[in-house]
Image (tube, rainbow, N blue to C red):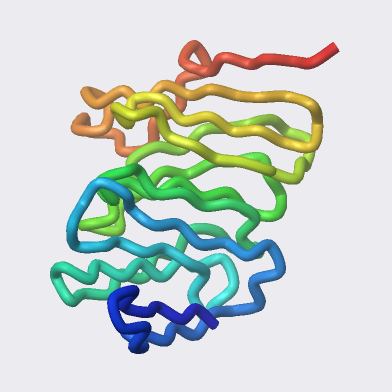
Length: 162
C-alpha cells in the first residue's frame, strides 16, 4: 500500500492499494504544484498514476510481467517503465496512457536498477546489474509522428564497464 499525507497536519490524503511491491517502486513529479504519483497497480505489470491536480486516476498496462523500475519526468508528463525481464524500456504519455517510445536494452535478461530522465525529458538513462548503462534519446518529433513505438538503435548510447 501507498499512504499519502498532507505534511502541514499529517492528515491522510490518500491510500492506494498495489500489487506486491518488493522493490518499493514509486515516483513523484517534482516540478508541478499539483502532484503526480506513479506506483504499481493491483494488477501485475500495470501502473497506477494519480493526477491529484485533475483528481484523475490513470491505469497503464505497462508490461505483462512484474515491474522492476519506474520513473516520472519532473513535470509528470512522461512515465518510463521496465519489467522484471529488463529487456525493454517503455515510455508512456501520462495524460493519454499511450506508449510513445519503446527502447530495447538488450536480449539477455537484466535487473534494471535505475531509470532517470534528463532535466529536459529528451534523454532516458537505464542502469542494470549487467554493469552497463544505456542512454536513450527521446526524439520529440518521432513522438508526434505516425509510429508511436520509437525503435532507433542509433539513439542508444551504451556504456560498458570493463
